[in-house]
Length: 117
Image 1: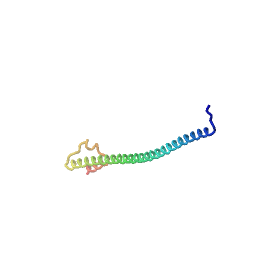
Image 2: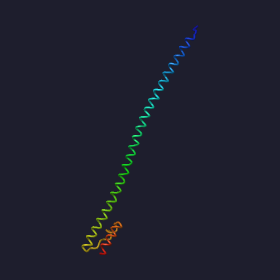
Image 3: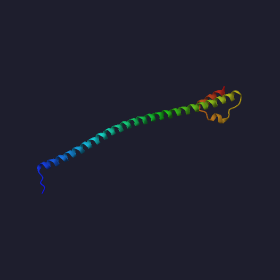
Image 4: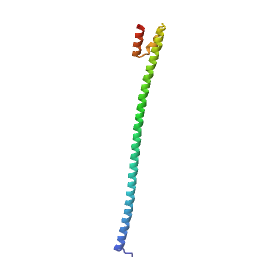
């Protein structure tokens, strides 16, 4: 028969502790690596979030600029109609109704003043 003495039990106990310590060290290492990876990902996310914010601002500025350009275009078109109509009035021709109807209120006032002169 085999007989176990206390030294065999101590050896068995030390082996288990060594294995547990190795496993604990492995888990600690995995945890630290995960923490580093998480920090990197959070940093990347922060950068992306900043880029998205910047792009949203650029988009808003582009929209505002587009609206300003539209307003300027409308204003220039109205001015062109006013000038064409002024030329017709100066030549003694009467403007067509369709030309005057697309004008903004300032342009219509200007034309009425011209016609009354």
